[in-house]
Length: 415
Image (tube, rainbow, N blue to C red; front, top):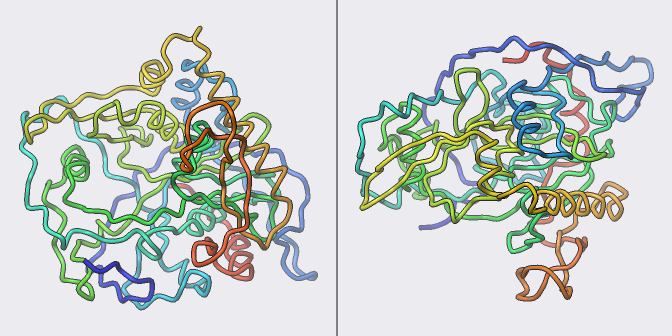
């Protein structure tokens, strides 16, 4: 099947109307100093700082009980949905601020996790795995880091004012902790700020008929075959609008001495609207990666499905504490401390080597004499940045568009 090109017309049909459930949160204000990073023209005063919602008390508790020493939740900025529009798209570099705004929904929430212990098991997985259920995760159907930045600004985050050091995705912590550069990660400084964005730019085909997606739909109360409801898009894809949408969670954490905005895809929410991670693969394939992904997304629950002979045989839920215990083993092993050290070393290397905006770099781990193995087949050393070239060097719109998006009046209420 031909890949869905950047400038292809995408007809996503109707939209889902998700109900905003809301959550009463205490308010906090991150330490702030006066800043002109996104100040309007000289005759207009910058908008006042908006108090940011407090972090999830459950996430704070789970991180503490898991024994982590470098992670401290600071603020929960809620959820947003990226809804690719049906019009013909420009390249990411040429996208306008208005195009970004029109595709971001700040009111949506993820589907609620059902009572998985009441599911009638076993449940056979469907095998109608046709190619019309696939699409390539490139802009606008993927690689939309700018949407998370815009949503965070609308929720009251002023990047320079709050001294945000990094914006990281769901898998970046694992990349830093394992020094694995087999997937391409790029880094740049966001225009007008001192914030370093780390963006995963791996292009792959998503098949919405895969078992993992079927399981996710089942445990959120949707039909397992809810994937091919609309018409073919330029001969490349045939999927329902809500399957092309991506819903992400935003939250701010202190990681060592750094303040980090995390944005990560969210599979579902629990009864208190906390993010839930959903997996149907065998634990041997995720363990530490899933644990670090849960930290990045702010998830406090893992919903795990067990497969056997083409069917879903059992489902259980685990807390972040339980997932951490299984991934790290005994606290005396030193595994947790080693992961923390590698994460902080990687962040320090990024901060040291990336000092100015305007350039994009690829993250690599050159060969060394100790450790595991990287994509070059050797032993990974410390993080290094090399200049990025070609199409993948474009991870954000123009500086002008970024400044416009991040200086918008803030949305005072959070769903």
